[in-house]
Length: 210
Ligand SMILES: [Zn+2]
Ligand SMILES: [Zn+2]
Image (cartoon, rainbow, N blue to C red; front, side, top):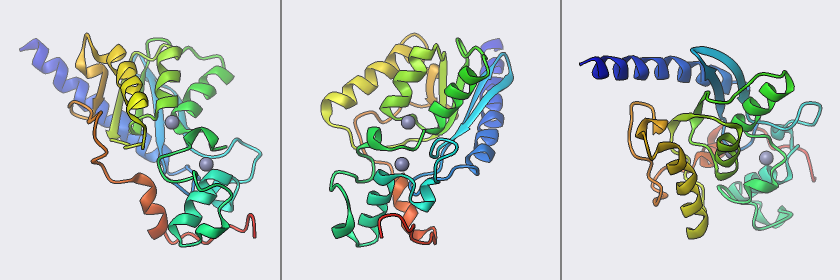
């Protein structure tokens, strides 16, 4: 009974902090997906982040990220203008100058000297491979996300992603979970491509590279 109550409270808290992550997401500036992240320690928001280019650099939506711009060109039928055919949705995330929301939340805490060890990371999309390994190494204790991000990883990378997630969740499945609970669809790409929405967002074409 007590367990049930504390789980109910946990999910209510998760909803609350993810709603803050939703608000943080509005700051995101990326031609691809918009993501917001919040880090919580002892029931306090200690850091936030959204995805976009490093401060002081041209915004992704203004063409500041070569990889995201290539991906955008492909989706708009301008494949011939791409600098690299590998810069497609869900791939080449490491070539993106955009800092991911979760990275930004961790980095911002470092910048201002705030401990993230044992904290919970809330993110509006499940972390990519890079963000997950960084979160684990930063000492993040728990990850809660709203939507599953289906990156196009090869089998080996999918397995390593799963290892990272299981490192958190093996002893307690709530330590890597979608809001409200549930096993992440590690093996599938069954979720909609979050980058696909960029074509219907009414964005003006960036001027970079023209
Ligand atoms: Zn980018
Ligand atoms: Zn990431």
